[in-house]
Image (tube, rainbow, N blue to C red; front, side, top):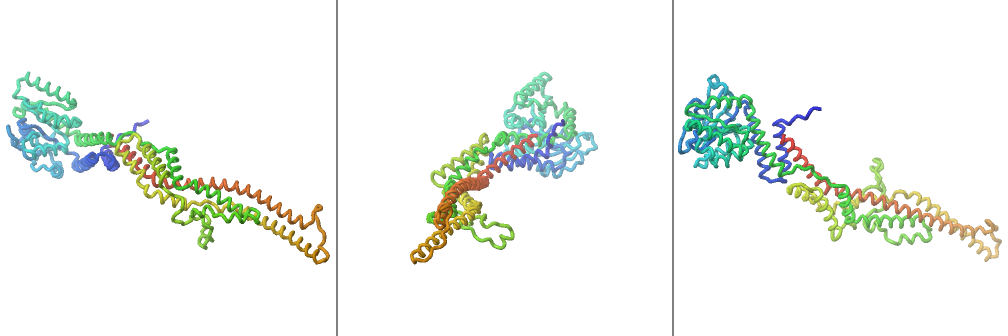
Length: 549
């Protein structure tokens, strides 16, 4: 199985830019701006000729840096100084015909000298050598210029002399802070002609040991004398090799990226993003459901179903008494009476009885007191779980996201309750059947009473009675009255059982529907913002992994 290829420099820079944007506002703003600066600076450098390698000679006053620069250039380009800095502005020597005007303009190097590529230095084609001001200059502007160019050039050659090669200003301010740039740095011990062979060996050994202790084992040390030419051929060979392999630019940019990515990963975090558990979401839904009055609504659903069912299927003589009590749902401004469907709704198949109530407010939602405290606790638990193990900046952002839309929560919950289809107008066809049966039985009773009344009237008027009909020895009028009453009460009693079963089902159905609406609200106003923040963290983490190479 083939190993996945490492991302290229362009991909790493793109990933670093994406990570910086994702981490913006979540980690130290200065660190984010440094990352953006690295991306901008690298992009600007890579837009210029990749064939040119910008190498800077940097050193202290009196180290012979400018003399070495002139020796490499083969002409008097920079004016050497012994006790005071004379290099106020950087100078450049360019080998070859590679167009470097834009590059040097970007570097803000005004003094430029070209060396013919056909000369003895043809092996240095593409080299752009800079002579920087002294890093220990008494002029602040000189030191600032060194600091600026140190961040921009592709390769650094630190020139030291036998007297100040261990100078703390060089090691503490430059070499140690820049030790990660060891692949694109070298140290040149100049003025070796002033040392006896034994002193030269001792000085080189001491310099090497000092660099090793400072974590600069990869930085090569080379001894030269710019005055006598000792070691100059070897130095040119080293520089020519760096120019030929065309790696200095990529190495320098790669180190820039690596340094800032390391710091960003430490600040932003590398652990996988935590996820909100279903249990925590359910606890939040439960708290919001209680605050929104779901228990009260479901109880009202059961009561309303019983009231309406008993009124529709009970013994008509007494069932109307149930309608004297107020309807629990309508008291809560829920489930208004069904309306007739319009022609458009009929043609489009919209059921008017299932449409949202359209009411702006109900009488149940109250995010105050105990319900509000329960919701607040659930939000805190969810935010803590979603931010567990993350750095403070990301944790604060996730906690803020969890509460970013809580101001809309009360109205949203109220709308959710008011727009829930409680299905109070479904599964009632059997009520109609029972109602018809009950009225038939009422008609039977009335017919029996009328028969008895007629018989009584005829008897009173001493007229012949109606035909004497009976059923199993019971006079027909009595059978009609008694049978109608008994059957009506029996049907009403059985219907009451059916209504009770239906009420429990309606309560269960309403609870599921209401909790579904509550879950939709909490996911939109709480879970979604938190998930977006966690996804943003994961994006920053993934992009930093790519940027790290």
